[in-house]
Every structure is written in C-alpha cells, then in structure tokens.
Length: 304
Image (cartoon, rainbow, N blue to C red; front, top):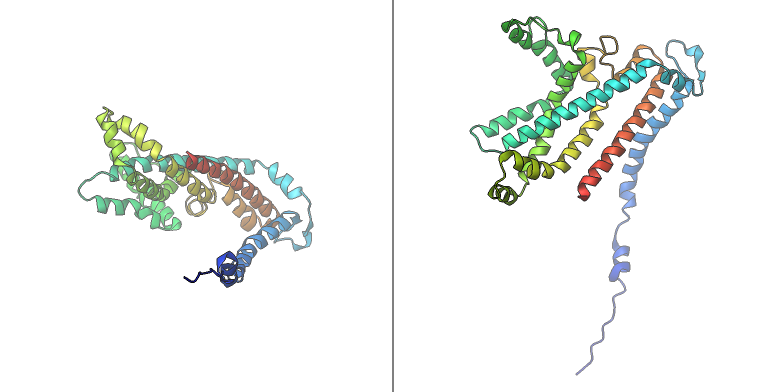
C-alpha cells in the first residue's frame, strides 16, 4: 500500500482566506467619511458660532464673545422654562402613549369582529405629517366655535372651551400623544404576540384571574418593549416643533415654548445666531444625557 501524505494548501486556512477577501475598507470608507462630515461639520460650526457675537441684523457687531452667550442664556429664565416645558411634554406623552398602548395592545391581541380594520384605523395617525395633524386638531377638533369638542361641550351645557388659550400645553400633549400612540401600539402589540401562551394557560390553571395574569405574566414580558418605546420616543419628542409652531407659536407667553422652539426664536426671530448655537449645544447635552440613561435602561432589560 502506498502511503498517502497530506500536503497543506498554502492558499487554504485563515491566512489564505484573508488574502482572497476584498478590502472592505475601500467600500465602507466613503460612507463613513460622508457620515462623519455630515455629523461633525455642523457640530463644529455650531460650537464655533456659540463663541461668537453673531447677529444677522448687526453685521458690524460680529466678533469673539467667549462664554458670554452661555452665561446670558443660562441666566435667562426662558431657558429654564423651556427645559421644564420640554420635560413635562416628553414625560406626559410617554405616560399616555405607553399606558394606552399597552391597553390597546391587549385589546387588539384578542379575537373580535373587524379586528383588522380596527388595527389599521388605530395606526393610521402615525402616517399623518405633524403639520397636518396639528391643523386637524386646531381647526376641526379644538376650535372654540366650529370644533367637534366645542359641539359636545355645548351639547352638555358646559360651553365652548378655547383649548389653545386655556389649556395650551395640555392641547399640545394631546396632539403629540395622538401622533405617537400608534408607534407604541405597534411595538407593544408585536411584543405581546410573542408571549408564550403556555405561560398564560399555566397561570390560569393555577387560579390567576385576568388582572393577576396581566400583572405577573404579560407586563413583565413587555418590559423590554416598553423600554425600547420610551427610548425611541424620547429622542424624537425632545425635538417637537411643528405642532407648537402651527397651534400655539410657543404661547401664550412661554407656556408651550420647549427647547427646540426657543432655539428657533433665538435664531430666526431674534437673529441671534450665537445665542441660538449655545442653546443648540445645551439641547445636545440634554439629549445625550437622556439617551445614555435610556440606553442603560434598555441594556438592563435585555440582560434580565
């Protein structure tokens, strides 16, 4: 018998495979460079403008201002008022969308006649542009004379309510919650459909009622989805602008002026580019703090 000897192929193995693989950096490099330029250039320009005395009406007053834009902005009560409005708006919308999203997810998970149509109608507000949503609520629902809400309140003998004058922040919260409730519903409904029905049946066999089953089985299963909804919604809710611009224009006074709208006022109404840039960096810092907190929350839920 002739002995067979194995001769290793110099092209095989990890080294051989690595030589045959294309250089992926040539493919991903342009995209990474474009992304960095897209993010870094505006950020660097904002940082530069925040240290400048830059007013569009008085070009002669341009020059280095140091930290005066920050000190002037931090000592202005409108900044702290806008931060408070932003936190109230974000927190209220999260409570409403997650709370009602869980209830609707449980409802739409059950079998009933017309469930498909009901699901489509429930998620339809998410596909309406924010400007259009604000106009619908302002002119068709909350109008103090011709609005649908005014018709119902007059029918009950309560008189018409001027929502945007008497309850401006509540009105904006309702509009934004109506827009983002379908998103929470989609995520939570998908999560609740992945629940193992054997756990539910086991809980029922042990004598657990519907409320107990929801509390100890369904709700813990939804914890990760709730964290994801809270994280994604918060990132977008920090920059709410169109709904405020169309309905209240930040008023009455500063009642509905959030941080994003305050930056708009400084930049495009007061023409103070330096102050608006300083406010933008403060908004970036606030958004990153919230994002880090939410990312840790999501990571903690994923570990459990």
